[in-house]
Image (cartoon, rainbow over all chains, first blue to last red):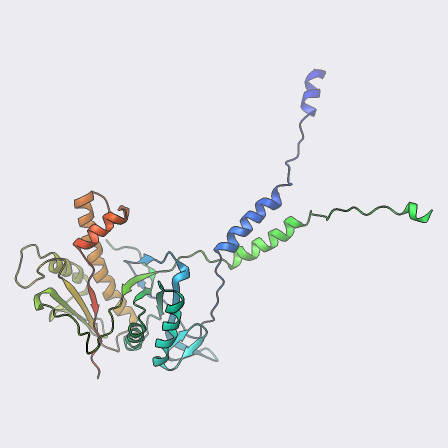
Length: 151
Length: 179
């Protein structure tokens, strides 16, 4: 009996925790790499519409966004439909051409993601698209939420 | 005497709080991270129409004109169509199984033109575009099943290309008429 007891006492009861910081750091690095900090403050209201046949944009680095929707005014009111690129509202539609062309020069494979409010009118969108054509940025993506398939 | 009494400070940095710091950072990134992927309908715009670059001529029968008004009412080649029939009509137009004189010569030649007015809400426009893309998705799935007996989404890049060549997605978004 005494012999058995001695053997049991040889193992430690505690779990070694010295590797814990390493594990945590690994998780930390994972989230640091995958995280995308929201870099723009929206000045227009965007409620995306839904569609069934959608695809994912895998390479987020290539994407540049254009937001179209009713302008947020102080005291929670909504104004007319406006176009926002980066952090500012573009009053002059004709200026979009130059902005997007400059962006295209930085990244040849750029995809323009159009985030348009569901109630915005098509007219403004087509004006923006016309500018995109002029800027040679032909790859676009109409951002939508996914809808369950009906079939 | 006094010096002797003083204890020697340890040369190591106390690392026990390192895990706490790492946890704090980890939680920050956990909260700020957004893993959701952007989804949407991908399109390629045509080059701008200029004087020396006019649009290519298209045979009338190869073109399916879809008009949508701002209330969401649809006509296909001047025929009023309920929105849930658009997809079946489009598939018939692209495949043209009975080789009708009215419909597309071949799936490769078929072009779908989508036209609407400036006042159309974006929602209706996307619904319409969704139907057109849906028709092509059905056709491509069919072709994938026939040729490779697999769903389109499970094909590899080369096989996808073959199927895409059978049913090229030719969608033209016409500009609304100026008022």
